[in-house]
Image (cartoon, rainbow, N blue to C red; front, side, top):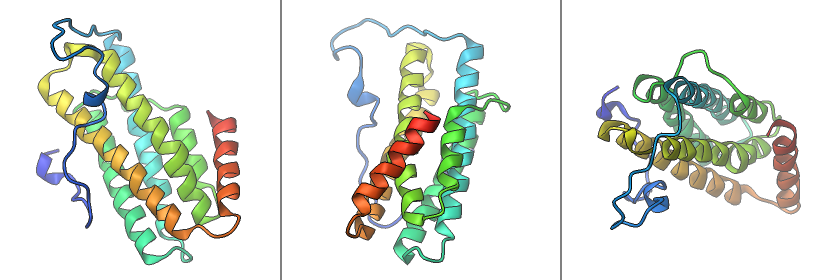
Amino acid sequence: MAKEDRPARGRGAKEERKPIFERLQPFAPWDQRNAPNLLSAEVAAARAGRLAAASEAFAAAAARTADDDGAPQAAKETLAHTARTVSWHASVWRDHLGGSSDADGKLSALCQEAAGRQNQLEATAVMARVCLPQMLGEAVLLQAELGDDLDRDQSRWFTIVTDDLESARAELELVLQSQLGPGDGTRLAAACAEVARTVC
């Protein structure tokens, strides 16, 4: 998929910043060592495939939550945009980062658990505070373990995906904060802990 096909960011999007992986480089800028590739091609394909499947499951959960009649309009728009962006990530993982098409795993189950929450606020909390951090962590770890064997195009795709996930997490957290009422903080923390405990 061409770069111009990437879903546009909504209003108020943050300006371009260094992607998370560049802020976590294993070696200092003057250090000439190369980061080794720690993964076989089969393992790398399976890991990318699991991230693709998780992206599809997350997009379905976000789209379902955006359709909730009780959600404020701003929350609906943010969730719908996040769903489109993360759905697009699935094709990036498969088409540009070598993900196998039949891989699945606990990340998908985690996102499906978010879709199963009956309350819109709880579903958004699970997506923002459990699903997205797990997906972001898996993506950053995969890039690190692939080391310097990645070509420049693949590195750029990783940058785009991880930056999108980081922005989506921040945007959904803002959606949550705008809707919190008395007692919601404790209830949402308990819901996130329950999902993390049962799925992760």
